[in-house]
View 1 (cartoon, rainbow, N blue to C red):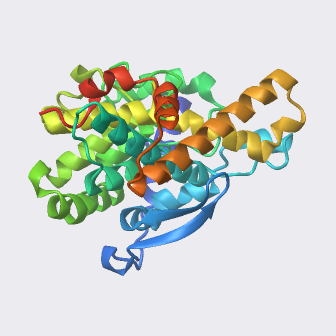
View 2 (view 1 turned 180 degrees about the vertical axis):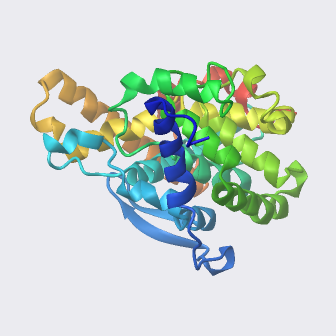
Length: 336
């Protein structure tokens, strides 16, 4: 087909996908058993944080490791010289924030009489979602969003992706991420292996097959709650009530209304680009408020992890920030 189709745009599509499929398909001399159970790294903004075994295993894959060579802000470093931070740094930060806020939601749930305990399932799954949420990003970031509408139209025409609102014109990275999670052997085998080792073994009560587990991750990364678009592709994940409840909760954390993705990049980009030195005073104040808020959440989550009883003012702080306290029951994994 590559020989027959000469249209430049179609050639671009195949070239883009071939980069993901072939350049990063090399074997690695690492197995799941040889990866340490956990390790501590120092991450700008959050300091020392712990990475678990599934995260370390996925980071060893060439297709994930490539994120360490993709600039978070693409060409911005030409003007803001310090803005050379990577998608990998941001992705690890998002995973950390998602776990922090999941811990706080669990605490608030208990106060409302809803028994939702953060389990190994949540720890592992949120780590993977955060790490892989930008896996489809090309090296140029959003710099070429102007042509994405045409590219996505061709992908639909060629039958590579289905026609639905998930693949919006400004979300080529989302379309590629879904393609990789559904079709890339390296990614599929790794995630399903984690599902078998960590989920089936540690959380047998959920009865989650490895393939279904990968589907759950794909649905959350898509940031899409309109289930009709997943009825065929990810039917098993969305038709299990307990998994659907988790998908809703995890999507709230990754995207709207909480949006750990945005919470991380807005302060991380400011840090590396040193925007505080040039921003107007009112915008600088807003950024400082966001940073203070996130630091407060992390501090409170650490108290919760130590099984400390929070004072009422801290509880109200968390409720106000999350803005979902009144809806926790409808989104809690306790649903069945």
